[in-house]
Length: 279
Image (cartoon, rainbow, N blue to C red; front, side):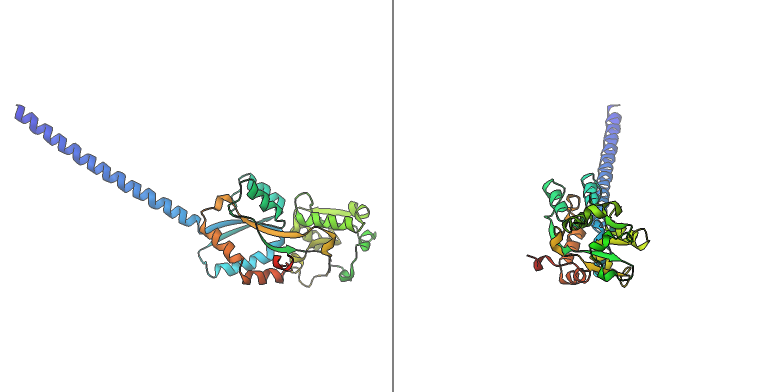
């Protein structure tokens, strides 16, 4: 009897051992699969970036992204346009942006200082504002003309959160016409919407971004007068890689590409002054 029992115990022990080895094998395979899945997800994440962009870069950045994809065909790049102030606030609230291009470098600098940035804030150009209208004789507009009753509405971006709107306000005050035109102002949410108010006829004149006036949608429409930089604080533009994208190789590659001469040529064509030219 004891021999039979011992034999049964031996068989059971061997079966348990086989089951344990099989389970261990299954666990090992499962861990490998999980590791591969995580690696794939990381790789996919690094093939995709979301860029928050000030509206004045709408046309220029479109060209830049197209050029970048010629050598990074698998890259998935989503661009979200808006006012610099609102985009900065969204990043602080957890918006999934990997790179932030701001019309005022003060916003990315503040994000870095407060722990929301991975890279340092990098300047890439200086923007400019213009008096722009689709009416005849727009190329000879003056600030004094803005007080004329025939100009009923003047479009600017909202100074509360849009750097181009703030600079427009500064210029109007510097020229001494703010009190005479404040009641005529209509505020766009960002630089692009201010342009759209003039395009639609809801405003006769806009104080808007030169980069948008030089874009393909507006080129040849109406006329503009460049507003002297001395009338307002500089529109120093800057970008930052956010903390979220610290390990995203595509974000790194895009910003390296952005600092190249080909991109500088595109920015210059849209009216941006390069930082080295104003130092």
